[in-house]
Length: 188
Image (cartoon, rainbow, N blue to C red; front, side, top):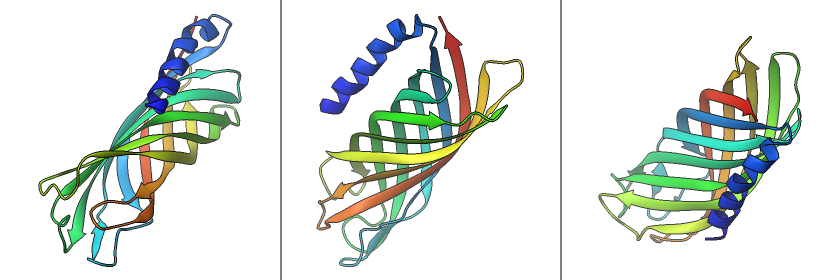
């Protein structure tokens, strides 16, 4: 619930901040999802590579710093044995992150970090009840400004970490998404 309040506050603050010469940034992206930590060993279960979709809305405070509300969806199949094997696990991450970018002409590498929550659900078989856990996110990437447009191409790698303590497992997870997409900037 706390992450909903933070995200709503960020989005409500965006309009007045934009009136001060700042820019609103809207990003949409998609790509792959994988894990650097799995559920194994007993019963053996691990996540296979899957896909990721997401987006963010933020305020670029100046050329280097921004604050963004973030939403990321991932789906990964489960392999191995035990009650979770053979099903897909969905994760919905939502939160807020601060971003630092280093403009270099048309190219802008960036890093970010933030907090939020991850909601986890499995479809057929349903080995656990849907749940929500606190989560942290961090990562980096690269923007490319398309000449004479307010549009940028982006590539990003994001880490999501949270505790998985259900379906007989208790692990600190590290999920990774690697995506490409577009960002649009507009000021008021």
